[in-house]
Length: 392
Image 1 (spheres, helix red, strand yellow):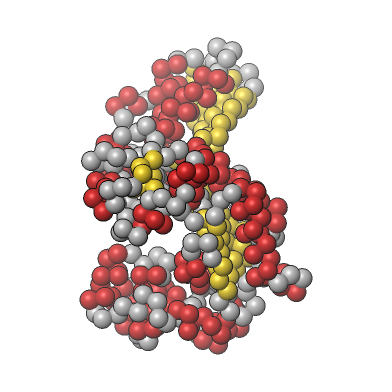
Image 2 (cartoon, helix red, strand yellow):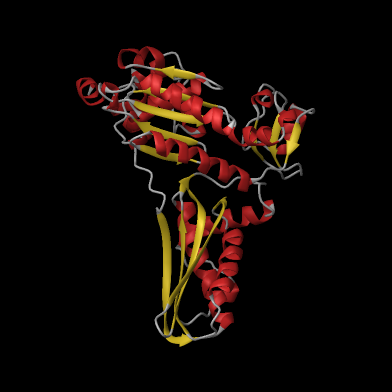
């Protein structure tokens, strides 16, 4: 495995670029008086949750997904900002456009992260210098701070970024990979969850060096396939490719009616059902969408399409409301319809940011609870009463 590692990864040059406290940075760009202050993005109610926070707030122990009530106790002088997902989505797309223009191959890993494959380009450019110039361009044009790590694969590049943030640049070349990883906490390994961390820590495995010395059979017995994956990462091994970012990547569904219809109640209920189905698929894939499209086909086979850009989301209510609004815009002739379709595109990996919408936490919790039921009993196990009797 070690020989394979050196042969397959010695010529790789992977850059991981990550915005520094992205949501907070967008708010600071809008209101410079927030710079250097403990800022928390999220709701202030007892059920509110921290979506993001500045590095000044992190010094007090505040972190993402923490209850806002606890964050207030840890940092009572923090400035709470409700947040604006629309602004964050726009800033994310601006960053992506700059990267798209400058690199041969990139992957948009989340709303604020990009992987760039510069393999082969080192004969024309110094990859470290090129990454530095790209970082400077983003900061100069968009006034948003960003850090990057450069290494032989995605895992090490991401860990390098995390070690040099905020406002840093770090290059970990192949001979330096293991010395770089060894002293780090196992918590630093991407994809290592809290339960696994506790389990390994209880066994005395707290540093990556210790983890890297465990026999593969023992790791597989302990954690299954995930154990082998973690073991490889602890040795700096990761063969996962940079997946080219395709903006039109989408998820969709459509329905052709048994008989052409003009029943608006049925059409709206059907649209609701379709959105619920693919929104669930979106969440299961751990994706968010920034574009929704509604298509109709009249009885004369004329197709009409309308789409709209939206803040990144995967919430049913947000998507249903926008889909119905687009349907009103697209259905103008009052002719019989034979088909209706809906599509989510501009997908990125990520999770819903609680408290950045008008949606209540109760509604978010409801979506999570319903998804658990669907996973256990099937996608059709639970649905809205208004769409139970659809016959199409």
